[in-house]
Length: 594
Image (cartoon, rainbow, N blue to C red; front, side, top):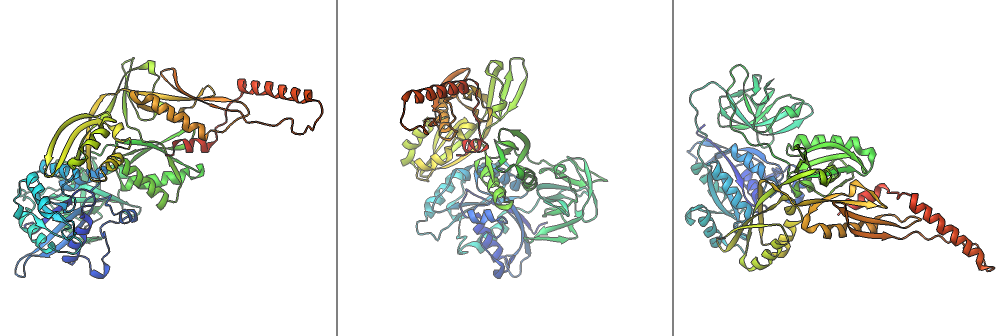
């Protein structure tokens, strides 16, 4: 156990985690040079194309600090950097003793850097601060070191300087990993087994393959083990380590990170944070993690209804690979589809892109919403995220919604533009502090406001220099209202939406104007109206299609034309009174597409 070092790399997005992981694999000889490729640990095509890590990936390396010294086993977990996947960072931190805090020398400390430090400190992990990308011509090495010193209290001379791209400083970093990160804690002599499940994948042949960190005891192939939380017993089919591909071995010892093949074909049985222990002599549950909670919801429909079954299979597969993604069947005007839960807007983007690319299914997705807690006047409380499911206004006693605490790190020169932007959102301002040469602005806002394109607008008004971090805070009273759309006097539920009371008229006006552009014209005139609490707040008229009923008449008495026009007028009146507007399927699709 004294030769094992377990660590992860944490940083803000685009600060070079995957590139550093490549160099570590190269320097330790874990991957042959001829087999190396950029972002080696990023398995998905979409990860390599976008240059981001979406799913954590463990790997085992061997490193000898000196010719006469011992050969160390280094277990690295590469983690995502985007805010949507911060739960992956907390999972990896729970499985290791230390973390490399990587900071881009050209950008300095960012908002996600601060939250990662708080996570690591909260779990009492050893932090090794590293300044990356020192080879860039515009690198601010000393300034970045000063920011890190202010944040961690680490003396500047103890902060490493590296280039993940060129490999400069990487051997020295490996030496520091060996010397500074503590070995796994030795438990008292005990034959019981405790292994923490920090991730898993699914194989159609082997069932669930659990990624584990052995805390106590040994996990051997063929032994009967128990999922302590689920109460499910299974035989360990195969155990092994990641090199970085799965490599079978006889057993996993205390402190090791590896995998166990469970042969469990019902993936809902296995949960991240559960404990693997001996079935004969079970040990108590280890402290795991909270199950990731869906923060935003959106409905996903196949454009061709014939693709429904294929879409269900695709969502099944994605859920097996990503337990934070959830879905349930639903149907409406757009046909059969799925109500899906996501961690954030990037998570939505990634899932939809994978459906289209990996499963070749064209889908349409509704605007993201959040979960509301609605207390009715009869005292019952229900949760809703679909506007069409919302109760009528006269039935509602109160509504509560999720709020988020946020942190924005910005250069002082953009403070004015940033404050103007925050005024457009329902923000409760917190404290503003100096972080090196930048300002950190803290505050709170409703999660629905944060999802209203806040991140993109923040990047726009600060020319890309500001960074954002946020986390769920609590549930609070909501000042929201449901807008319903009436087409020719009939409410069309698919067009309903939940909006802020202060934005209701603006949203209603934008909605009816958009519908006017895409709804079909009829032989009679009709109205498109938006209403809230029974009051019409926006309206647009659709003129009737014109049909020339006298086109075949040439010259002659005008009275013949007048009679035909009068007859047409009466017919249109009857249609207007009794007719219904036909809404083609593609109208609903166009209405929800941005």
